[in-house]
Image 1 (cartoon, rainbow, N blue to C red):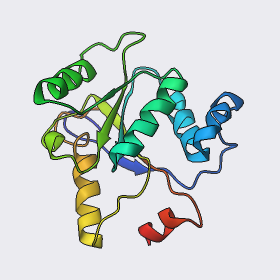
Image 2: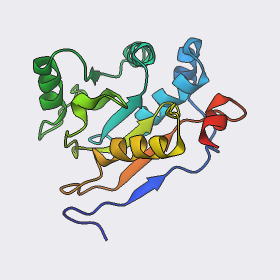
Image 3: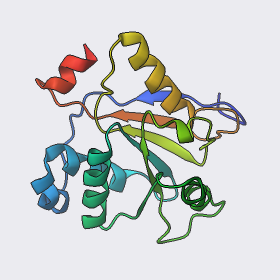
Image 4: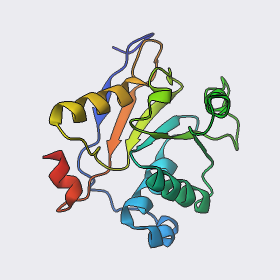
Length: 175
């Protein structure tokens, strides 16, 4: 049952689609995972907002560069408290107009946004598995990240996407 304060979470099954479009593959100089990220964002229905979680600042820059090259407007939660508040306010606008950013890039373990209510978004994308020292810490970090959009006030179905490359360190971390 969906309604005020209720949301279902779903995890995407293993990707079996035909993959990214030719346009997304042109961005493949950044890797197949980035091409799939661009395609996932483009496939998200218009008017729905997306949180993209990364763990490392250098990867956040790479993702931001890829999105810019793909002409996908995004906001980064970084900088001073004033800058972060401005980015959050812009992302949380009641009405999403054409050309507005609907993607917010977050460092997954950044404490500055840990209490932020981001229920205007209903998609969470983890670009890579979180690198932690224990399984407990992994689950806690991911649960907190998802909890930024899956909380009271969320009226849309919440979708969680995890980008994991088969037969890679990603798969090892998940085990």
